[in-house]
Image 1 (cartoon, rainbow, N blue to C red):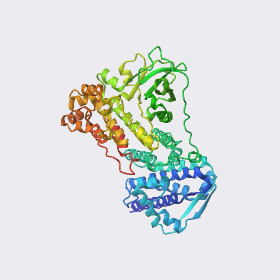
Image 2: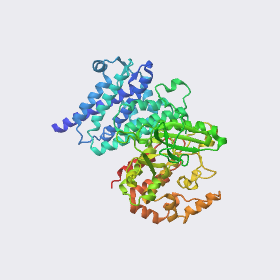
Image 3: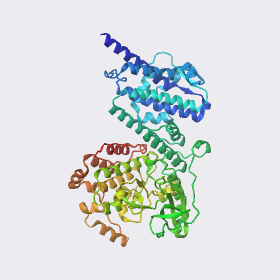
Image 4: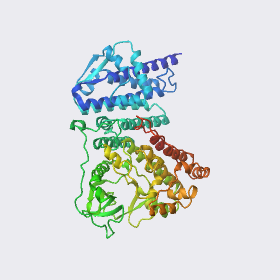
Length: 583
């Protein structure tokens, strides 16, 4: 009996402190003059409140079914510490020398906080996690005594971030009381929330608040999410691929703290690299200021030069913003206009480390390697699929669409003379980004779906993105193209050959004839391919059910409902499932 009574006492302490913490976070306030610092603080508290509510849900605190195996004595101690940080002005003054005061919350404000928030990061989290928002509202409504809150009056960004780190650390200790599987699940759920809030954010300020909140985090996943938040800010400033609800900043005050990449328009002439021909390939090496560079050309009609120049500059700024490894992009040096040959160039520097200085680089595309390297382990092919999925997730978190994913736009670099196996085991890089569309009607018509000159490239396009009646480009079209590349990885042959074996005999020859005669032909698609029972059997034999489900999830992704374009359900699910695949 005494043990049971003690356990009940520990649980009661934990419950009371938990509810006090939620109330404190809800009503914690900052002075109006704190500006961006106050916004950062409120954003941080919203995400920490989500973590605390999620933990409470997992251990049964929200439903009077507390988990018996949890160390409630320790949980209560941690929650008491957290409560003290959030509710005691004396603690904050003594520990951080903060200028804080206590005040009583008025009844009208109490009632307002019980409702769903109507703006900012809190609104986005409430939309994505309505059940947890309802729980917070119920805690406010059930509280039957006056609520006191802390008001932060001083402007000290360093102390603010230290305080947030203390709160985060205590909640992390609570999470550590869960088993390892639950901790991993909670981490994945939290990362997904961060990404979807960034994706749904409509202003540079909202995306910037999350970026600032994450900037000191050292975990790899949070560094990549931070980079996606920055890219979202850049995209909104440029007004590219803009959703109807997103706002392009018009005033300098809307972008305070944002460091935009400075576009470099490269003026010196490119020269051949090691005597190799120049201006013969869409992607080729060149010499710029004595160094080897990689340049991707976009050819345009000479009469359309000016029309495309702004779009290419916009694309170059985007590519200069891809600073994190998760984007799998070489460092973009800038934009190289070559009007004499009607060429727009994007120039990339080569990888530079102590081990690679002075290296003469060569490249192979994924398509090249499929032709030349006969046997490739399933492990490596799954690694490449996951790398591509992670890159697409990064881009879509920022709201940027690639628009031209296919195996010839995935490249591998290695010292010249290296074996194909060496190339294949190197880092994959994603190239071939299409024009970044600005947010005006003419640009939308001109650049939303710029068709490729090669008819075979249409095999990677979603059926709704083909032909004259094609729809405006959507995230699901990138997912479809990614599914095509994964199919190639599993069968280890170009997509046109896969279709030729199972759907349309001699497809490559038919495409070649149609191309030469400037004719339109009906092309097969993945739905048609996987309706063949034999294809599903062979695919499952080569790669298993998980990869088959991933491919179907990608090419069957429905058109987003109005207001749901920012959600990332398919993208995050694909990355998680590919992570399950162990060979």
